[in-house]
Amino acid sequence: MTSTPTNRTTAERDIESLLHPYTNPIRHQEIGPLVIARGQGVRVFDDTGKDYIEGLAGLWCTALGWGEERLVAAAAEQMRTLPFYHLFGHKSHDPAIALGERLLALAPVPMARAFLTGSGSEANDTALKMIRYRANALGQPNKKKVIARDRAYHGVTIATSSLTGLAVNHRSFDLPDPAVLRAACPHYYRGGRPGESEEAFSTRLAEELEAMILAEGPETVAAFFAEPVMGAGGVVVPPADYFPKIQAVLDKYDILLVADEVICGFGRTGKMFGSETFGMRPDIMTMAKGLSSGYLPISALLINERVLAPIVAEAGRIGTFGHGYTYGGHPVSAAVAVETLKIYAERDILSHVAQVAPVLQDGLRGFANHPMVGEVRGIGLIAAVELVADKETKTPFDPSWGVGATLVARAQDHGLILRAMGDSIAFSPPLIITADEISEMLYRFALALADTA
Ligand code: PLP
Image 1 (tube, rainbow, N blue to C red):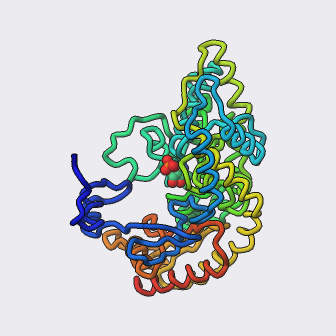
Image 2 (image 1 turned 90 degrees about the vertical axis):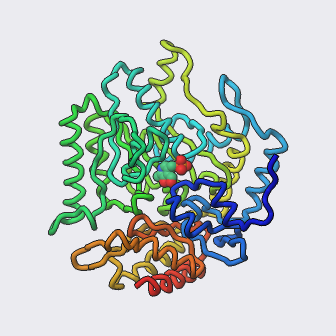
Image 3 (image 1 turned 180 degrees about the vertical axis):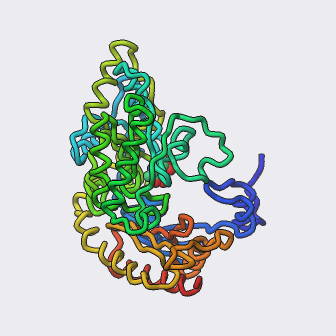
């Protein structure tokens, strides 16, 4: 038996015991961990007591901030009553049923059922499996290709990594090819051609999508996956008419739309779902993060009748729908999610976001004239500042410098946690953030930018 070593620093114990996700292990040995000990409101505190404003709500998830006692109470009560049960083989429990009902009632388009899972990746993986299952059920075994976009982020399971359109998630993993086609990213600042209007850009992307579908054969294309605002790809806010144009193409060729609401769901973009903000009519919605304010792992899919009916009908041929996770709809997570959704409603989180979003969006746009800032983009309480070496030509900084990571490190010095997506610095604070706290966050960001310049 080994005992916990007492003569070691926390940093040493971390370095010797953990392989960190999404982390360069060599760099980690050099710089060590930032150990977060506790949180309150929009702030977290490290193990020396230093406070940080959490500008990314953890990983875009802690919408209600830290220390929300109602969620603690909901978890504790459910732990005592029924800490575990599952939904397999006709079993059920109240927290899952209540969550399914609430999600169906919140859906911005008619949805038929909720399917409960444990993480964003699991939700999107499940969507992929349902799409294939449905194609078989409909007698369309060739209609299984899916389209995802460059810079998309849909998870890291072996299948959802393939949906994800970021090199770091592909390199050296030898992903199998689950028939993912790649469409363009709707980032006008980077993808728009000289003289092309935003509207013409959207039209072109929709035309390119249609050309791809026709080249592949519409009878082979099943679904299009899209985050309303791309998060990990650098907070890409699409032009207003992008999704309506894409939706028209999908409708024309009987292609399902999967809205990945893992980041955008539950108020992040100003409406309850990003699909509402951007005029999407999804057949499947996947959601996580804000669903439980990150307090416990849980995710969900909502599926409409077009998806549900063939899956149900297939039972007549092959019986059981053979998919589900032990912890899908875990009762404690589900109880916390139900409580989270109640709090959003009671505190009218959407009105709060509407009130404070301009402080963030206008405040960040105040940095637009800074010589290192190429673009400021965002909507609601999600935004990014993209750094460039040359504003006129939009030339990026030499990647060997790692300007994004440098700025994030300086922000950390000033008590602000942010995340760099390449050279874009992402902001996605807890939705409960006040105008004053946003101002403080922007002040700390200004200090970090000054230190980086
Ligand atoms: N989809 C989106 C849009 C995400 O941002 C993420 C995670 O950040 C995922 C899916 C994957 O979620 P998870 O990390 O819970 O598997």
